[in-house]
Amino acid sequence: MSVDLNEIKLAMAEADCLATPAEVSAALDRMATAITARLADSNPVCYCVMNGGLVIAGRLLSRLNFPLEVAYLHATRYGHALNGQTMLDWRVRPTQDLKGRTVLVIDDILDEGHTLDAIVAHCREEGAAEVLTAVLVDKQHGRKARPDMKPDFHGLDIPDRFLFGCGMDYKGYWRNAAGIYALKGA
Image (cartoon, rainbow, N blue to C red; front, side, top):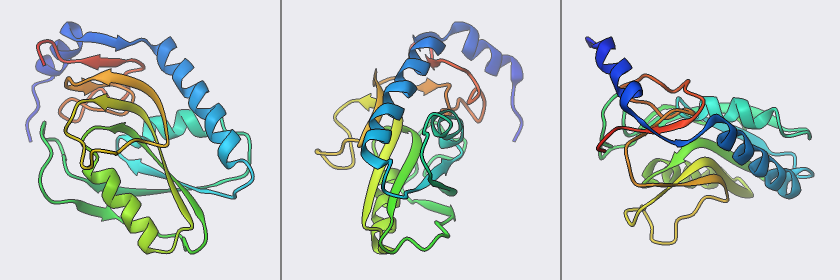
């Protein structure tokens, strides 16, 4: 796949900043406080959803000052596409024994929620006692996989635009941006 780096750079140069790095940090602090209050005594296994959840998990887990187990999984509907595909692609399934465990699934965004919903269902099928979700961004629109779908913990409500930064990408790039940005006109 050939990438035009000038296009990638231009996307950032023209993007609208929807959450500054300071606002993201404050949101992560609020999430950590809520997660600690809820899970500090539960011996959770925390799953980072690759690739988007990598940045958020790294920034969030260091704020949780209690014992927990960390692992990763990789399921996607996007790849480098701008729109989700219909099939869930399991690249790495959870590997820990989840029977009777509390599971916290950490991802960058709850958009439509098909991927997160499938991950939660899989963890429950594997015997998890409780499965909770933590996302930095809850995208605001009416296209969720289920009408009642809400993350258990989230940092920011962001409008329905094409987002990147803080784990979210534009054509595979800018996951590393410290703020949350939206493509101009999208």
